[in-house]
Length: 171
Image (cartoon, rainbow, N blue to C red; front, side, top):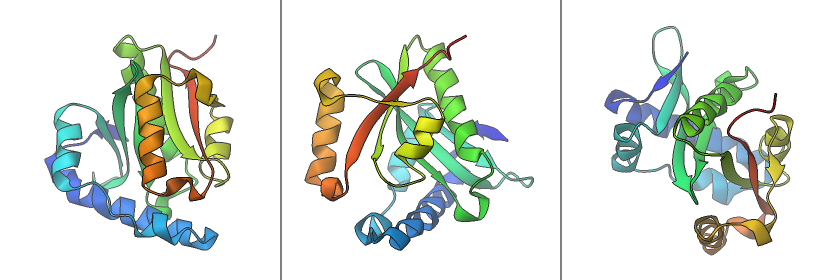
């Protein structure tokens, strides 16, 4: 089940992020695995703004989460993390769908994200969900700034791409 995150979920969201990050070690991406999750205060701000969703188990404990921003007027996926014990069950797809509905409900035309190009559960996964690579020349100023910030953090040591899909699925 997907629901909006609330304050009781924030610590568990950090735990999910840490566990999900560990999967990057198998690709030699220790810097990504070692990256600390957002502080509780930041997660709380997303939750208070209605831009944080969690997927919960039968006891209402979060097992995955997604944070959304508005970037250049589009619904932007800031973070999506699924605990490895719950991977490969379609939970990420469901969270992305919830954020897509949110974007559409707020009059946004598309959903964007930035991700690692060659990590199997990143760009190739998003491509299967209908996302396409967004060429750098078409980035808006906020997305360009976000991608520059990721480069400053050293994330471009591994190729990154911006991707998009329509907020309203094609009929």
